Image (cartoon, rainbow, N blue to C red; front, side, top):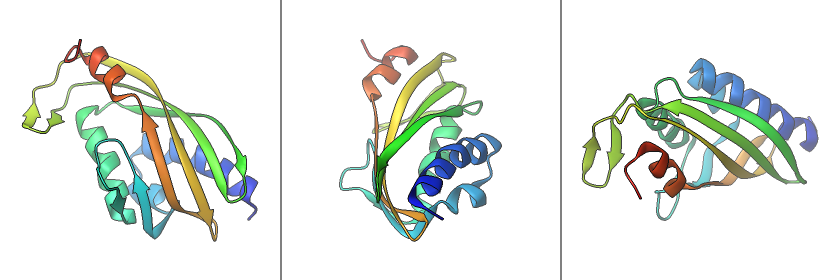
Length: 142
């Protein structure tokens, strides 16, 4: 595949597989030893399983959560993939002090993945979203 096809397939495929809770299918977009930097994981995380567990944690907090692929652009081997997340907090909210009870509130926010593709899969990426905006929507931050 080409870089353009790989990055476009990731945008559409991430939406399809995450929303279907197809963790095997979602994991196939990442190298086994993918290195990622995500909000809340100081120093980053390593490995396909860690990525899947991170997303499962979000789904635990927002069981009805859905992602929507909006656009992708970039220069080989790097792609910027923009998504929107929507969900209702009906599951426990992980905090540094332990799980907080669900708020029952809905959130909608954009997020972005800047990914380096290698051999048709994501080998490295940085994920960005405004955690304060999400916490404000949940009513747990001013």
